[in-house]
Image (tube, rainbow, N blue to C red; front, side):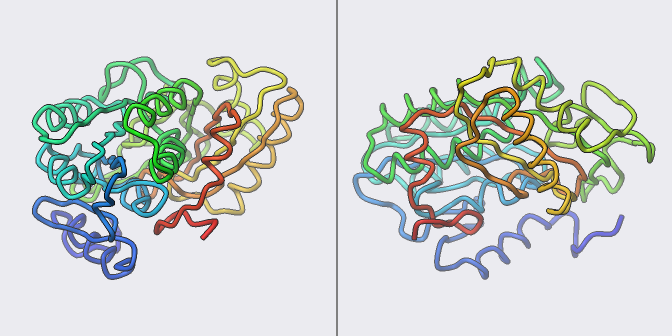
Length: 330
């Protein structure tokens, strides 16, 4: 195993110290328990938007802390859920008097720990669970579908609404609408290596690819010969389109994501193919996001996410955001 780390047991703490050094104007990192909070928190009268999960998916979630997105993120150990005390601390540090909305990816540990924290919090707390992965119904980590790339879009749109003054009930309702309108699927050309494990999470031959992988290094639902870029994009896009379903005349946001080890030259190539395939079906891509925004350490691969848009979602997506990983309109 070759990684730029000192000690596999302290990799998250060490990375958080570096994150604080790099972005002290945007966020503050607290270490006991580990919580990343926007620098101006708490914002009076504003609903706090809080998320989190295992580390190893950077920039998710800490990279999205800041104006127009998250008020706090709770980083667990690599691919391990954050604890209830982290979530409680995040709520306490960001509660501006309007309550908190917890955005939870559908993994058993995340759901249980965020739910426990919500029940213990003194503030008014509500939560939503995102389950946008069409690859599996159940997995080792979930009951039901996993929460994956749609989480990034959800955090941006709901974060913008909260910054504009939407109350807790409105933020919750908007989040539920986004969750009902977004679908994702991913593939891998290579596995990732968790630092404290020291070996790849699964083995792939040079001529194989794994379709339907998860973001914790889980293998997918199908192992097939590695095909062309067009074949790869089609293998992801077809199940997504059939699931909601998406249809001619729909307006969408297309998010083409690197799983961590895929260079942008390949990602842009894939994105262009996806845009053309959607145009051929009469689906209009109105907004786009391309890059490594929800990763699985150094896994080589990609995921596609489609969000069916309405006017409000477009307006909130375009609203100003200023975080370490996303910035526009400021």
